[in-house]
Length: 409
Image (cartoon, rainbow, N blue to C red; front, side, top):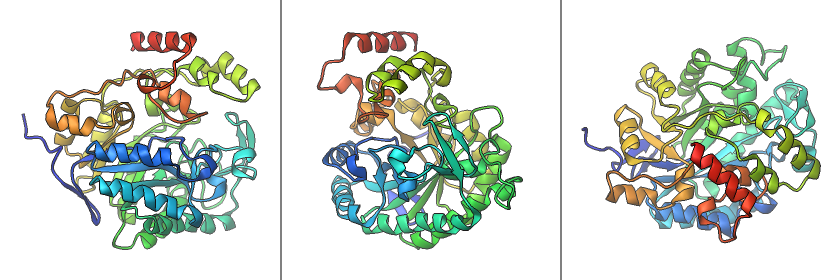
């Protein structure tokens, strides 16, 4: 067996991490009032103390219109002091700090984002449900600049890196995907046109990042449904991002609005998800048709690896970060030995914030995440938490659902 690279340093742009593990930007839902909380600080500090090379604060909207949840960060000057406290706590534990920047596009509602949701194209979002207004061509430069302004705020807040969200059906992804981009102007049609908004964003981001901020970009390898982007186009997107100056690509897939379990894998616990919802009609609607809206996609370890290896082969000199289904040290070593510069983990570090330190001590370390996806079902309404570590007792109906899902997994 090859010697493990896991605990060797890795350099991404101007940043060197103490090891090759990164906490992925899994949404924490710990930002009431769209600002950082003590809960958010405590969680990321625990992951940093647990040995991770870098922890990524999840999805921060670059404008108010980019908010998809009411417990989500919104990058603006008044939250900089709170974010600085957070990054100082992370740095004190020896880890680097990153923040994911994005805009949700059509996946919002006026009650959250304060306006009619905007996207690549006009239409109707069944999941909110709401009408969506396609962005006018003259609005796109200001939207791209908002990403650059968010990078500057991230620097002031003490972050070492930013992760631009260009996947999962968010705004950049909505421009890239033929499924959601029906524009008739120069931003629609051919892939070259569909990449134009991403190009504008990357120009602003790289200008703002200068020579002291690392820039990672999360992108889709496949959209995960018929009519979406497939690998051939995504490989061209990866090459364009490399040309734009991105320091690393995080290889993911799926649309949270169309193929959510393609992103996360496993089964969505519908009863759990609706139990925490406040809106009565949404609660009953999802309970009735949730299994059809959110179909199960079986979980397996390193479920994106086959696709990611195609990107590794096509882009031999681009730093690539693998994400998706990593819960055991043996598989992480295997992924790193296949040429990926670093790995990201989400649910594993929610289940066990100290998992990286345990992997250092145990060659066969495996985290105890059992893939019930309780954490995700709960995340939509309250904070993301693992059911194995709750202070409160779960109601019997939820316990039963989780046990059934885990027995099937």
